Image (cartoon, rainbow, N blue to C red; front, side):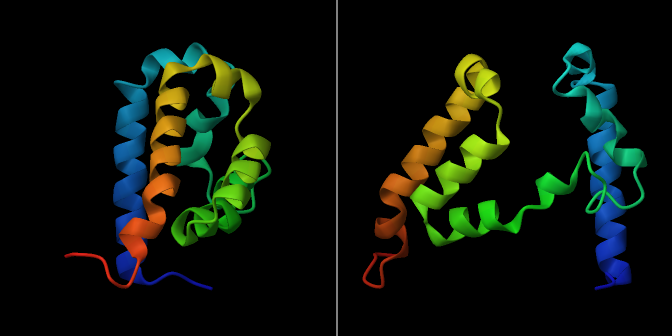
Length: 116
């Protein structure tokens, strides 16, 4: 499915922002093996089909997050996030903590009788 010209502009802007991040705050991570391939992302014409990046576009993970399907989400999380990162990276651990909060309160946030 082709993207609209507005979506293309938005995509270009986001990729440019990501590239700037990689060149500034993210520069130190370029020395880390697991992050190194992501430094090529701004230069890959169609990352959705590129072997290095196609897993980033797994809709199942996002669908499980959006629908509150905790079991599926964490099964996919464990498949796609390497154990050394999950267990050893403090940011990944913080993210996982917040993900657990998201799923713990999901039904409260999405129930029909919730207060606005």
